[in-house]
Image (cartoon, rainbow, N blue to C red; front, side, top):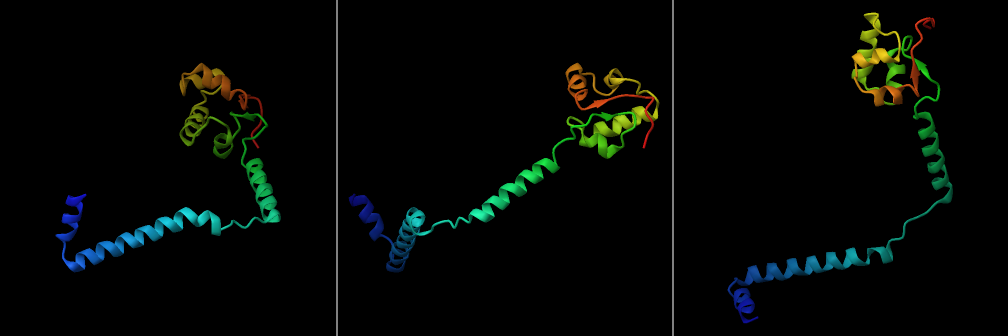
Length: 135
């Protein structure tokens, strides 16, 4: 303790005053932070909260993947990207495979992604029918 007091007295008078002021400011900030929950109450508006909940559910519904299975042989790039599991790059690869007339069935996708699990998962959302006419 004596060393601490001796080290504090080795500062000049303005330095000591500055340390005391900084310590006081720090103490005030800590006190404000710890008691803030007591004097700042969040305003809850039930109507606004209900409107936000409804807006969030509408957003989720509007942005969920399509429930309709999409024909990979006739789909455009935006439809392909909307399918769960297909990125921009995969959509491009599927369109390129179709352009080269190498897309005849879901098994044709193994040339793009050689993963049986991925093809099985994709078949929940998409199919290939070469006889169906494009829109």
